[in-house]
Image: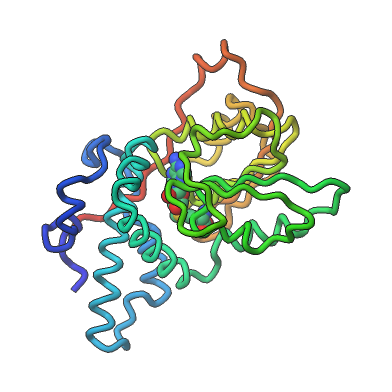
Length: 277
Ligand SMILES: C[S@@+](CC[C@H](N)C(=O)[O-])C[C@H]1O[C@@H](n2cnc3c(N)ncnc32)[C@H](O)[C@@H]1O
């Protein structure tokens, strides 16, 4: 159990084999060695041998399905992913159920860390505007005090009423209208540069950008910080000592001029790929 290749026909649902997301082939992508989501969950009990056989089997099938879509995300553009999930919303639900299940095994879920940090911010007169890009279940909007914060939660598919379905690379938010942008484990698509450009566009000057990502996706955190500078963001704070995740706070220092847009380095993070066994 659990030793089959990920793309073996038995593991991949019939429908997704026919209409899988387009994008770069994963053979060409440079990827983090193992899917870190699964690795973390394995460490914390997802593959718990004490579970009855049937339950273990169901868990592992759900896990395979989740890992398949997770991998597809990292090698597809956000446009392709959005189109795929628009046509197959039930697959998005399966992906999210799998994600939530895996995340429930982690000792710390980064979204909870981000919520705590935002809650600790000093109270201000007017409501702060937060945009949760790639919000999943919109836990931030569901948890934070609505008297203090106005929260927009975007994801490719709306899994509940808190979420607005949209590609975060292209939103209808006004320029310079947002106090805090959050990317919590959501810089997934192959065009993350577009998502960061969008964050720069919507953030007010001095606005805060909070990023949490899987540690193994970074070759060198310093390279990422340097590239973010070119996108108009200056580092305020980093936390690199967590065993699984990196956390960054950036401040928007400048907008990206049209002239500068053409010269930006492409932002790249390793995809979380499977170890093909
Ligand atoms: C790993 S989940 C994390 C969800 C949530 N941020 C959390 O921490 O609970 C990443 C989410 O980002 C979303 N996502 C990735 N790229 C996106 C894009 N271009 N536009 C909107 N959502 C995106 C995925 O659909 C997925 O729901």
